[in-house]
Length: 405
Image (cartoon, rainbow, N blue to C red):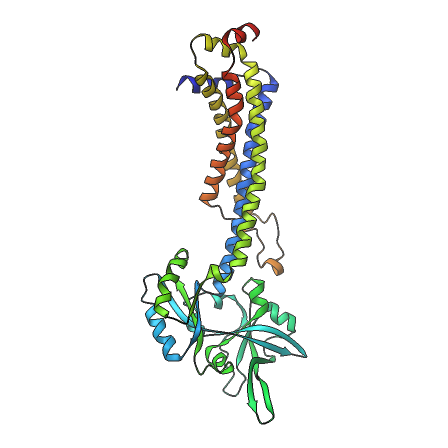
């Protein structure tokens, strides 16, 4: 062990007096609590963000392509897209706006047409069905099936088996003039993705019935694409654009939900900054502890200077003292954070209302980059906190230190 490290450890472990011990303990404990609080909070926020992203992507897909296509066109494009190395699967979809009416109530919504079998290749929307089916066996003369989100069905007061009317913004020409197109549907299932925006504004029907309702003649309004790796979304979008050609819009899941993801990132960044102030306060305890150490060991500093120790070596002693305290605090903080995250994830300490959040436990997801950022930032703050005491101690004159120490 180098001389300065030896002296730093010795000063830390063999200081006399209860007050000196308490100040050192407070410095270590302050860093520990700050690190643990920051990592635990970020882990909980990561859990909620991951849960929200899973719900959004689970009901959509990694990439959406918008643009009207005939049946032959979209089948050829699907075959071409699935040959791309980053693409796992593709499926047709129809998006259109409409108005749903039931029992004297009318609500605006998005009508989404899909092929239940092909949809399973690109998302897990089928797993969100809480009751009913996309393709019920009602016979040929029954109205087309329509699956509603649970929130939308609750707002309408409708249930499975009830018949509703969809009104299209497109008008049809009759002998009496232009009238909006209307069609009767029967609710065949209820779906809950866990994301309120979807459950309250989207109704699902089969691809053929949606195509007929919007007058697409068995065509679609676009394609949905699933990738092998979600993180390759931007790269895959660049490869897909020349494949689908001019006149089509290619959007990644992040672009489709840019406002949501921007809000989540801003929330996490602000929480990181606010909680990092705890570590900043703890660093002040380290600074005060080192200033007290410099006063306490003034005579020792003078003796070391008289024996040939340079001001640089004295600074290193105090900086090592700060780093030892920081290392102890950060290590204990990491262990405490892991324990807290395990307790939160394992035991139902905070019970969430399932009808609001669609989960009963607080989700926790620890990420390596967050932990590295906290550890690195903590070391930096503790390093800065040790600079002034180290410089102050190194400027002590040997004779004055021995005389007045």
